[in-house]
Image 1 (cartoon, one colour):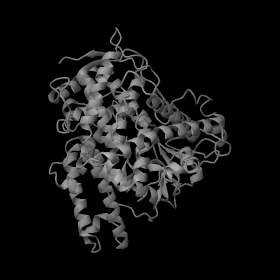
Image 2 (cartoon, rainbow, N blue to C red):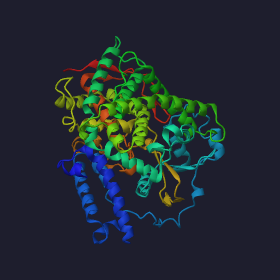
Image 3 (cartoon, rainbow, N blue to C red):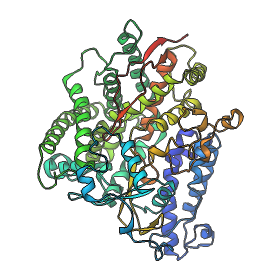
Image 4 (tube, rainbow, N blue to C red):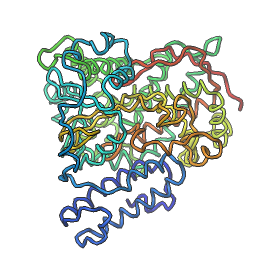
Length: 580
């Protein structure tokens, strides 16, 4: 907390970390209340056993959050989620006794799932949103998808009230289903490399908490991320030259522009994870960089088939499974060689000041193995996700030239020239840029949703849901619904601004359910890379919008579903130099 106490004027970028800290402090307070037999959070002032410093810090965090939340409606919405009573982990849901039993939750049969009858045999041609709509239209807002071929049941919820209940009762160690194929690979195929450590995605319980406790102070701290603004802006500026040279006689990008965005994303995540430039933006891509991009895409596609769609790999090692294991081996070989090179370089030339040390350097000082696994996971997770999200935002702005012009006007205030530098200071006040990013993620989410195991016995929509049941938060089809986001099919960044909706008649997002739109998750298990991802997107969208006026002259963007939703179209953006 001390790094925030030293800054009397917390900024919007501090909000995710502060909310995470407050959530963890609330858990500490709750544990102390339980020991004191006081179950009502609102009565904690009378609890003699409550540590005064914890209570004081919690109140100070709440005050900081209110300062930040006054600056944009989206954070005001999120703040409401922190101001309710806590429920004891062992408290029985009062509606449990009268609720309908779990086996009465409607849903398809095992036969329907395995045969593809529900989707009329068209699973290859359906997007994840199409599948979700079919499920919801067929069975309602709570659907039981039966476990098949060695998997557990999964509930699909289309209710943000359920999401709130899940998050509020998830406990100290939230359980989020990992990728079984990754767990198998790390524990059975390459224990020599991973030594039983699954990483943040796959670990659960105390082992997850130990890992997260090590990486949180480094990866969620604002001053650490701000160290990378200059380096990442240098990558973004170099990419502007790439775009300039890629244009054809119509000023359009080539059909493989998505591949170039992947190259930018890998170059960027190389700087963040390893403080290394891979040279991905050079004309000739190195074999290792080319293979990393190619293999990550294929790994996501195969993992979707093996861990999401029905598969017999747990009983019989299919050719698809064997291909995935071989790809993971190749990725491990390449990525670990890059990690080892970075570690040797840093050990031979250590950074003197701890304030200017990279993420990898900071983690190496705490736990070398955690540092290695975290760097590996950053490279794995940071390419397709960032590319897909950035593509969505650029597409929305290209289709809405009035919003693009408004953003360019905001950027001209801090970038009087196209090549003016972006700095941590001049990036503090870019509310419309951040609103555009948030709205782009709402319009075209790069992921299908989130998943949580119930932290206790719950009642959802009148049904008993036993502790440990996996519940998929199938939220993306609701992002476009007018009852949640009025004029939901329109790209309206203004809905996320504090004052503008009231003055312009634009519908405000502050009335949306606070647990509906959580692109980076919520609570202790929120995405560890949210600060880095936001910085990457802000820098590139700012640079492209300041340098170019861009248009989309083709059919509507379509996404193909895998672990990450990727564009099906060729990204032939028209790019014309913007006025100085």
